[in-house]
Length: 304
Length: 130
Image (cartoon, chains in turn orange, green):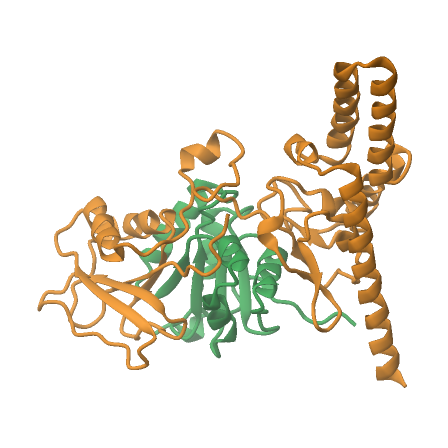
């Protein structure tokens, strides 16, 4: 999934003093090609590039008087320079790739892969899919923390909700946004508003609340319902000795759930055993409850 | 009380050299229309000024990339070419780099045309023209 420790090399395209500007017809194409390969790019004119973040920096330009001498006095940045005079767009990108050497970095998927359907959450092609909190709307009710079985959410030191483990999130699953009563959970890569971060209308709040009430959709608590279904299936299995029938029942239940909450089938299929679900639900509920109590105590202390 | 939030851009803030520009390519999922982001990038590249480009703000936020904190911390106005302002604000906050309440404008390439985005994002008030 995400290699959190890896800072992608930054490419600085230098067109200031001592350099000839890149051909105008190629400039945007070079930028686009580098970005589509996962590089951060700075177009620098007269101003020096900001080196504060450290990491690796590859400086490219058409250096008519030869490559400049560049150094980072802080020693925090590894600077490499490449003269790209006369190179085509492809050759310029190749020069950057060569300068990167063995440094690992995350790579966006090919555009064609994106166009052809959902992207698998693998090391090679990770789709940045995780909840983003609209803090202006969030009331820290912790319903999402209680709901998520994958430890995506946590509690910050100030007792507010925090997206702690974004890489744990299940790609294309917006289910937690459906349990938020304030429509405060966004998935920027989602296909529609307001979950994609678009404006929230009053009608959205009512509609989302209806969707959210997954309990109502399934006639009870979502996890309890799953456990109940599983228990029923087990009972039937023991009576009828029909594994196929039990499986069909489970599929029927999950399909209904997937349709109701727009949860990808892969996510539901990957759910742990009912006992493990129960354990996780209780653990998450305890964390949420503790966070709310701590926040309440902090508020009381602040107003005393 | 609701605190002031960064606004979607209008032509109110000058895009002179004191304004930093950040362009997001949305390369990891491409929910921003390709034609719009390509045209905007061409417009920025032709504008004759320095600017920052990142492959995908979402991917950077997930990594809590320290570069986001640099961008948010800057003492100069910041104009971000990306998508929905609510989402962009949330991504910076998730990366422990909340955007300042003032001096930040966000242009939405997801819903606006390239012409509208560039008109708002590169506008320079008459008084700032040389």
